[in-house]
Image (cartoon, rainbow, N blue to C red; front, side, top):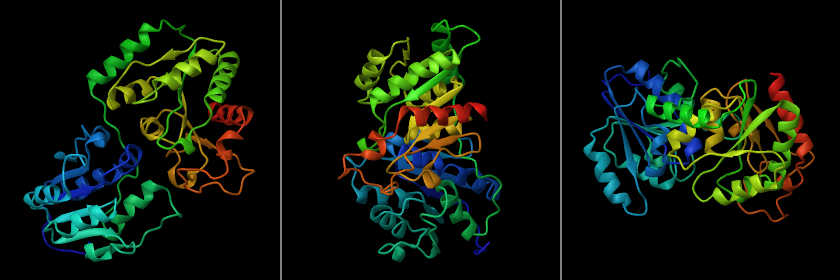
Length: 337
């Protein structure tokens, strides 16, 4: 390792989004393996805290609510933690400042312009080259910490698993039917496949695979799944209002998940559910469902893919022109795996 002083208090920073927080969790177990007796805390925004809650390798999750807390109050909170190693996996201007003023002897971050001042151990970013999981783990490689795993994790309690089993049993599905979950949501409208396409795809899967369809939704998305259900010829099931953990448990009860690029996509893949991600403005090589049992699909005829635009100047053609047939073919490929 590049430093020799004893490390006994560690802070990992990944403020958001839910999927990005999930993809950063591989760092935690590696740190615990290297520092078995250290206090390891994780800083994230309050809405994303369930993505790391329950992790047995963490001592605590420190939360930040930007609507009601100032950066100054957060810096004061972090300084009271007396951390001697801070690893900033987010590296925006706010977290760079927090890291710089944390009081930690070792401050790890990526060598982005305007933020290098905050860190005394700089990681060369492989942005645009490797999956986000590997991007996060590169911080540990820079510290010469042995990598024992690159698998993200999402921990569920027995209560959450019981909730999901009970809801699944309430559907009274035939035993030989597979359950296919569809997630129509996404953080940006540009990442969302058309609702009528999801409905048509669901009907085709029911007819071809003797499947039950489960529709997933999060805050502000209930009307979307009601619309999908109204367009379908065959029956489907809409999950109840859930916590993020309960949604994860319901995802785990599915045989397959088809989803836009979103937090639930990363949760499903992390939980081992074969997952098909639908992509357009984001890059599946960098942000796709992690793991060899998963697939992704996009409209390969376009040359503007991976633009990262949250607002599209050409009418979001990457999603609007991605046909149901192409996505169905990708689902068949996932099933064949």
